[in-house]
Image (cartoon, rainbow, N blue to C red; front, side, top):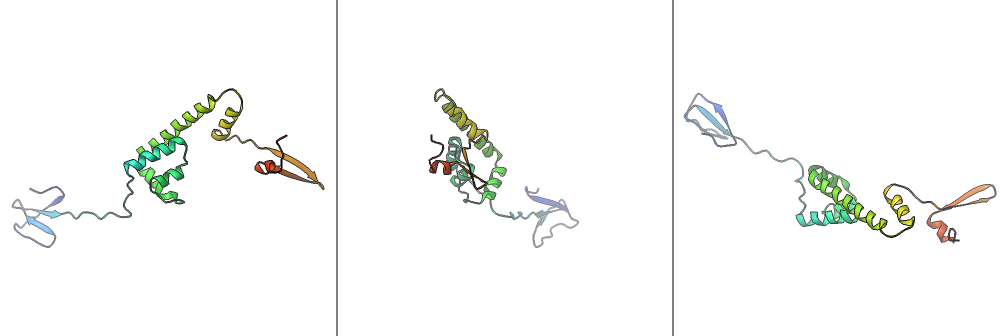
Length: 161
C-alpha cells in the first residue's frame, strides 16, 4: 500500500532500499516518494479582509482604482502587481467593478434630484460621457490669433460678464 504522493514502480527484487526511495513492497512494487515542487517566483500577495472592505467602499464613493490599490497595500506608481492581483482574483475585481457602478448610480441620483436646471445634467455628462465644456476667448493681434481657455480665462476676468 502506498501513501498518496508516492509513485509505484514495478521491481523484480524485494526488500531493496536505496537513497531517495522507500522500501520495496512485497508485491514487487517499488514506491518512490515524490519531492514537492518548489514554487517559482514571488509569493502571491494576500489582501486582508478589512482592507478588501475598505477598497470596496473607496471604489463605491469614487476613489480612483490607483488609489484603491494603495489601500490594499500595493505600491504607488506601479500598477503591474495590482493588475496581476486583480487578474488572479477575478471575484474581487468583479466586486470592485460592481461597487464602482453602484457608487456611480448613487451619485447620478443625487445630481438628478438636486433640482431643475441644466447644470446638474451638464456636470453629469462632462464626467461620465466625456463631454467637456470649453470656454474660449479669441483675440487677434498683429495678424496672429491668440486663444485663451479654461482656468486661465477666469484668471484674466474673462467669461464672467
